[in-house]
Image (tube, rainbow, N blue to C red; front, side):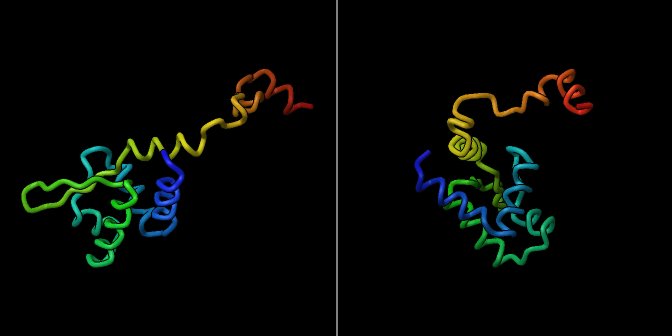
Length: 114
């Protein structure tokens, strides 16, 4: 993922309503939700919701499809995974990021009693 794409995605998510929309669509999984259901879940006015859906789509975070007279939005899991991968690339210099205490229950007990 290119830096400019990452910046667009993070900027799109840096707003309460858009973050809530994205999280709701992540929870709904690949089937996604209709615009009406998104609006009902989040109590967002249709014009405002339309603006936020457009911003998230332009950032590559959502996909949409027509089903009859409904537009269904889904989170772009590929973009989400690319974004997470970009943010965590070379994390901890290639070393495990998990503290040793969390990996070794005996050591965790030992550290707790020290």
